Image 1 (cartoon, rainbow, N blue to C red):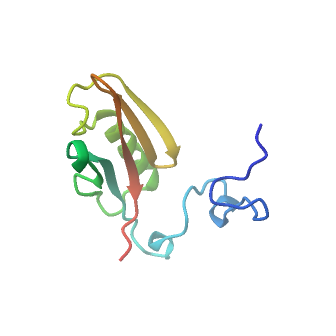
Image 2 (cartoon, rainbow, N blue to C red):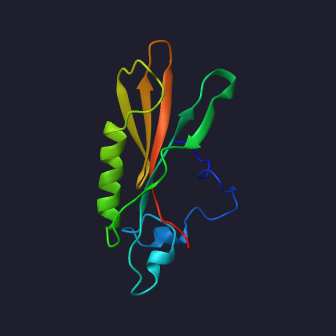
Image 3 (cartoon, rainbow, N blue to C red):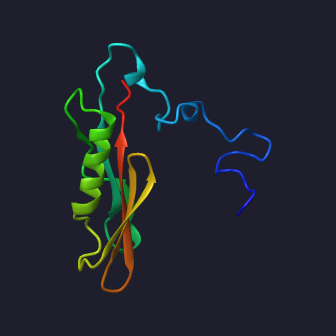
Length: 129
């Protein structure tokens, strides 16, 4: 077992985050935390686009906004379903798919191609006005 602190913290910093004080809370406070504010979420897919030297990591397709009032749990279920079914640009010859949960509402998907593996990420995001 490592004694190193989580990424992004120094050994002197506390490892807890204000959002972690409540075990049911899995995100930082946002606009949806205002009393009476409707919950707003979008699904974001980040993937490798282009070929060769012009390959880029991009949010593509555009974020898909979920209906107002969608709960965080519903948004996370939709993100997992998208991670299991989304057909990315690469690889062109798709093989096995492995889905990893990075955090609540964030998934990394590794897909086997003919010659190497490719990955994409699906996340639940809160649009900030």
